[in-house]
Image (cartoon, rainbow, N blue to C red; front, side, top):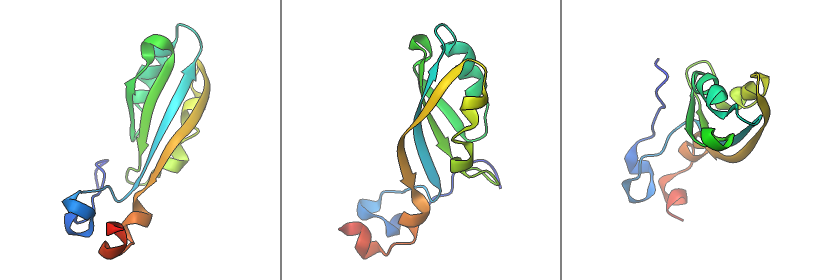
Length: 109
């Protein structure tokens, strides 16, 4: 299996929207002053992690997705071990597994 996210059948979601089956976390990673770009390069190389913006202001906006053998929740603390990181804060958690287990009728509500 690749690191690509898995998706549930579009017929199981409201208005045909395709939603990921795994978890997705959105976080802000605060870095030491002037280290945003350096930290962004290291964080972005982690499995399932994507850096979206913020390197220039030392506050990275990242997402972490489940990848094969590596649940997103297990990666949440990984950026804190990178030199130059002050703290990582969870902003949002999308639980795709829970959503995938719901019936189509429950999703329409």
